[in-house]
Image 1 (cartoon, helix red, strand yellow):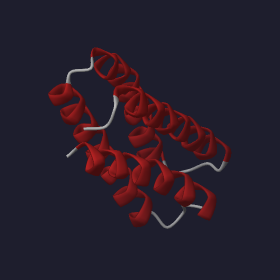
Image 2 (image 1 turned 180 degrees about the vertical axis):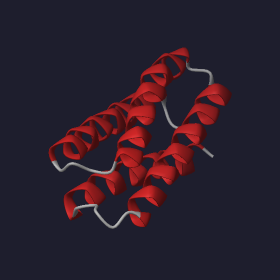
Image 3 (image 1 turned 90 degrees about the vertical axis):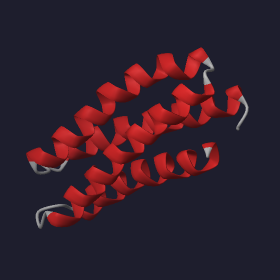
Image 4 (image 1 turned 30 degrees about the vertical axis):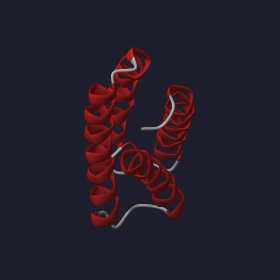
Length: 107
């Protein structure tokens, strides 16, 4: 398992990526289904912050697994929508990749 400080640092980076994706979605008029995915990720990542601060390894893994599944959904929606700009795709992929990488390092 990663050190607590490394998990917190990585999670902070993930939250920033989610925030940037949200801003990009607003600026580029992305499909509402994709906006919903990112809004859900944003809400859940705020809740996850408390779990990460608890330092409970099992809860952290479970929480990151759930967030990564949401990232998978955002990626799927992004790829299925024709009206998605390259900037939006890049923002979504950054969120997904960071979540996926953290998940793999926790397992």
